Length: 346
Image 1 (tube, rainbow, N blue to C red):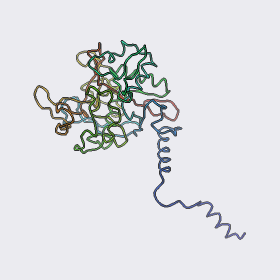
Image 2 (spheres, rainbow, N blue to C red):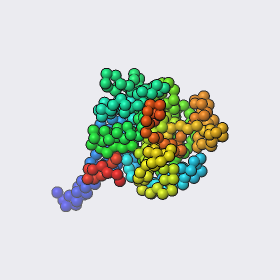
Image 3 (cartoon, rainbow, N blue to C red):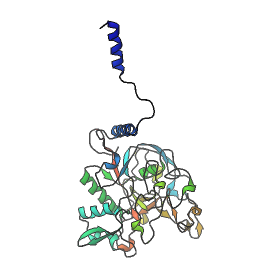
Image 4 (cartoon, rainbow, N blue to C red):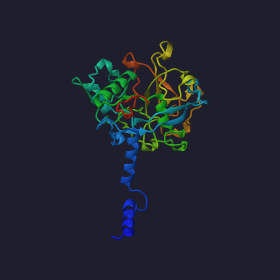
């Protein structure tokens, strides 16, 4: 073969087959996403929603970044000051933990009747009850959000899930919760900045007699761009941070986890932060200016209730059933695996 022809053939072989024109296929885009996820979770090619296994919840990868937390013009002092926060990547539950998932924990962890007081609350429509020494879901409530009753049981659920899956599972920090809700761009609402979209298609409060049967994820129009559902208006959600009304003023910039120890006196004793539920806009007969306008909810909810996105709430361990908050739920965060295979707080 002539030398010039051999050189030309070598050049063609090195360049390979020309790439097809046009946008990448769906399979190609999925492959790119898997490769991107693998950079955050080295060695893992599984979609985020399958990281704990079937039936243990769907999870969404939230990539780390910076955002402004809090608001200076908030109604309460504990919403101030605004401060910059930098977070590492993490997985977050697409929805709060369901009754079916929580009942599995109650049975697997051998939780006793006197430890799960919510099942004894007379005024609540319990999604989980005890029958023949076994915790079972009420009919039709399997996919409804579970009432964790207290942060103690919610934390026990996370510890049980960690042991079961060999992944580090925990409650979200308050900063992580707000970052999921607002994103890097500081959205006004989980789905964007359009307040006019606040209606029965974006959220619903679990406040009726059939509240336990309002399935999680029922309002996809109220989800974040990443697909995280039920962040505002659906129920109160427990964060892992101890509550301190003045913590924002001294919060560290990177991965804040709240105060190192709980308040031990007064109304905030052993209190954890709660986000995402509802609050009354009236205090002592005076209209409280909220981030959300009550005019959006005529025909949907009483105007005395508004969804809480910015405001911080608290929860303390109940001592008996009459102190149980039957609308207190939670979602799980799964920590990202570093290259050494161990799960640690970044």
